[in-house]
Image (cartoon, rainbow over all chains, first blue to last red; front, side, top):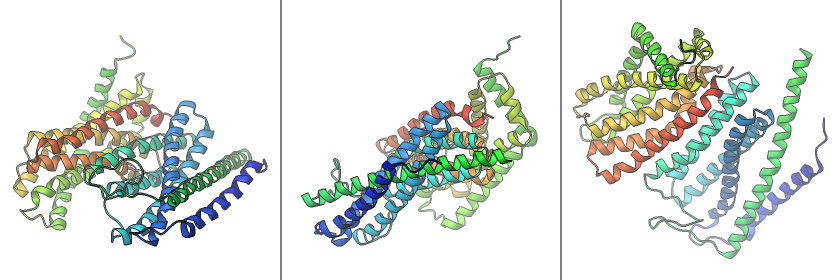
Length: 230
Length: 227
């Protein structure tokens, strides 16, 4: 077994530090929002986890294509790692969003396009794992997983467009908003915390991603050794 | 004799095989039909379909019925191939694999259309709504193509898994939500007589979805049936 690379160890520590600093910045350093009050602090982690969650889903669709072209098992391991981490992060995003929505919108959940798309996307990737769990042959499992990751990655933006045919109340913080949406703006300090949270979660994502890929490689090794014994 | 039949010929051969098998046993169609009737009856009680609100909810009830009946048909049509080893035979044929996919799509679509053609007049009769609206029929055509196109690909994956029948709806529904949403939106637009500017966006979305997913299925079907 190859020892853990030093760079990965550094990343492990870096992500712990980043998480602590980001928590401090979000809970203490960031100014309290005027309208929403303390609960707005959840926003920094909400965006951070959403960003890495989406990143992983996009990765998995691209890795699905790479696997289908190359048929190299290593890409399947990377794809599973991306989906698995993103499912967890995305779930955290949804929960944090619900915590924010309770005081802000006076409800835990609304059928807004973003919320609905997020829920459906999460279900797509839960289905992804159910599909994989039902197939024993590793090659077939990898092929089906790749095809399904590709389909899921394509359908998510179309789902968003389909639901947008109805009106949205989700605040738009980055980028242009259309006239009927409330636009929130951030002060300078908030922006610092916001970008640090994005950075922190990117580091955490890379660290977990790397560890999970290593775990996948070790799992594959164990499978191979088992087959050799039998 | 030509050894490698053309793509169209191969596709039509698969369609002919499916249709003649189905018209002899009629097990798939009768199951889908009876099931659709039951779903409509259950909705009647579950939603208390009042005459005043019927127009708005009819599109939703119809599409839910089609979606449920569709999974039943898709599951069955692929399970038959798998159980009796027909799929291996099909794969051995010296034809492009995507011809098999399109053949299955066309025959599944045919079953879906037959069910829809029977359900629509019965629904109109039971609830006193005129569903014979050319716009609605167009939406049903487009929606069914998208649904069956993705469904056939996913059904051929699901039958190869351990949990097969249970797996198909779980795999299929989150992916076809754009189809169902825009189909419901466009259908209820046509039923309530909404202006065309309101109906066009979901209709365009349906067309785009169909093109994208039929192309993806065309490219990936090979990988799904490969042994």
